[in-house]
Picture 1 (tube, rainbow, N blue to C red):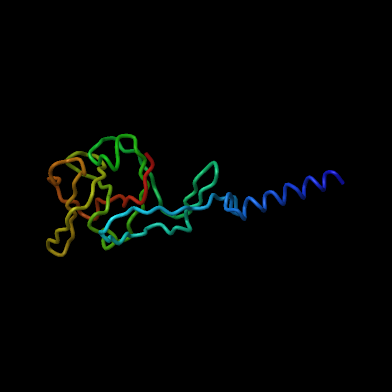
Picture 2: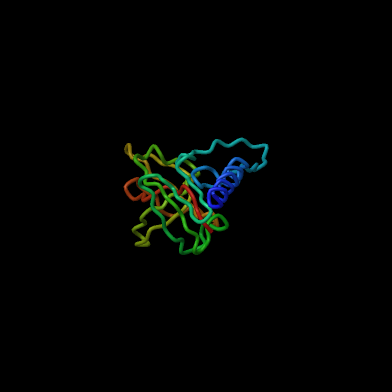
Length: 160
């Protein structure tokens, strides 16, 4: 009988904590909201559905196919991304997915490396779109134009 009483108490305590918002029934931590105040209105492109992100007390799961991640190796995107930041990227399905202000990773042949920079312009030549890019911390736009074929991903999140 004592075991049944203890079980009922723990069940009731768990139910109260869950209903109070400390823990959801699937053991995820509830999401909060934050206000980033500005009189400027900017429409955000939501690339990963909010429902695909699950935060537990001891782990984070993103349940979305095709995500990849990488470690940043320089400070050209500071202060947003700095050395050793981790970025999460979605592989674009078409060039129409890439917009001004997106942060993309791409293969740059002149450096023989994959670079991550912000899209600051788009140039169409002979029906083909190229992206002008810039590191946030860099004073000038990059010397190269990036063809869609060289794009590896669009940043959807970061850990620092």
